[in-house]
Amino acid sequence: MRLHLPDRAALDLDRAVIVGILNLTPDSFSDGGAYGDADGAVGAAMSMVEQGADAIDIGGESTRPGAQRIDADEQCRRVIPVIERLAGETDVSLSVDTTRSVVAERALDAGAVMVNDVSAGRDDTDVFRVAADRGAALVLMHMLGEPATMQDDPQYGDVVTEVRDFLMRRVEAAGAAGVRQEQIVIDPGIGFGKTTAHNLVLLRHLDVFVATGQAVMLGASRKRFIGQITGQDDPAQRAVGTAATTVLGVMAGVQMFRVHDVGMNREAADVVTAVREAQGK
Image (cartoon, rainbow, N blue to C red):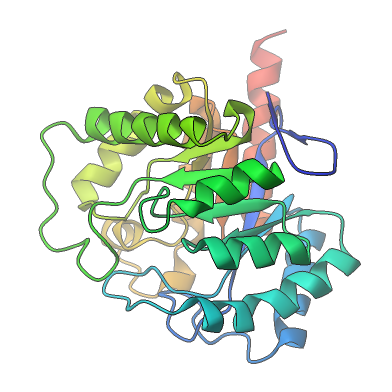
């Protein structure tokens, strides 16, 4: 499987794609405020590239539980200079983490090739138009409610079926707006309006999402449910637990992994891939 990208060769999904997280925010749950200026952010991104990142996802608005919204101008102020710098210094694919079409469009102008929309086009339907017009890859994620309220007693009848059906409706909506199927990635939204029990069930049934035929991205990195299982209150200490979810994802056929700790997850994915290939011989 290959993911269509604008103005360059498609991204090969036959090998697990590791997407490094670069949050240019003061309030993200794990690394908020870690990069005080563009130099620090670019340096962090290049370090992830050296560790094996295939793509970098750059965001200017926190989507942690309880987070408040940031306007498009402020998001652009945070992310565009970094995307411009990285586009000139590395060949890895650059993604912008935003729900706003104006931010997406400016990021694509600056050198990004992918839009990661945690609202799946519900916040701003023009994101679909931008992706369609520009041929950009588009990640559609499931979230119950919005960041400010998503963890207020989330309820599902059948979390796997409901999340899958929501995502396929959003794929259909994107397609109706002109986004090609080979541009679209779906993300079950681990930790976005889900309890620990919901997250675990989704991880147990990642194959259901793979079976849709869409590329799938898993974003479980350093999430609270890992700390609840391992007893690690500090998100930075949840790297091993995150790598375990990457192993589960590769075994289920997931193609893309959005992570903070690139090196560890690159190694975990590569070892599992080697074992799977050996079993097939």
